[in-house]
Length: 191
Ligand code: VGL
Ligand code: ZN
Image (cartoon, rainbow, N blue to C red; front, side):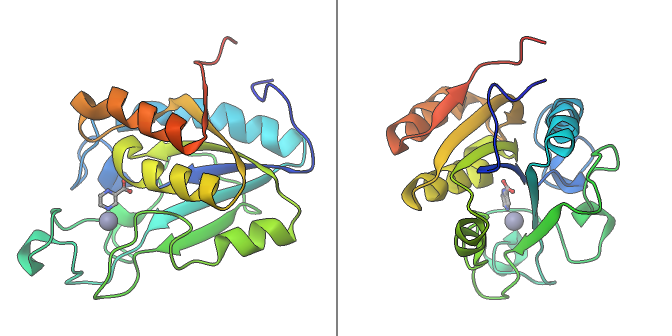
């Protein structure tokens, strides 16, 4: 059991565990794939306990505004229906997990899984109060998602060993930023 506590008001939120954010991908997160076996344990537990599982994905149209050749900050990545946009093949995402796509507008980027997706309302409708969050990248989309989750009033827990940053130098600063937003940092899994 990896959930320290759980109930029908818990949900597991997996952010952007996609090929392009893993080693060999177009926007590589160092050691990004190491989150996969960790998250698989959380998925196992969530399934056993009937906990809602949400998986977000970065899902850009071609020529997205965030791409360098369009004047954006990032190399081309997670283009809709490309291999790079697929979830990491090792991620044991069950059929019933809810998929959330973001960053789908040509002219606007979205880092947070809550941005433009209606996710907060959906979770409230399901009676969710507490979110366990992991995925990629810790300093970009996970950070934005955690901050929005706190702002939306969810009790938010970051699963520290289930996330990795694009820029490892910023990791500590990012953790402090999450804490000041109100998130709780879950230490590495003891099991
Ligand atoms: C992300 C950079 C650009 C992420 C998405 O999922 O962390 N990072 N788009
Ligand atoms: Zn993106």
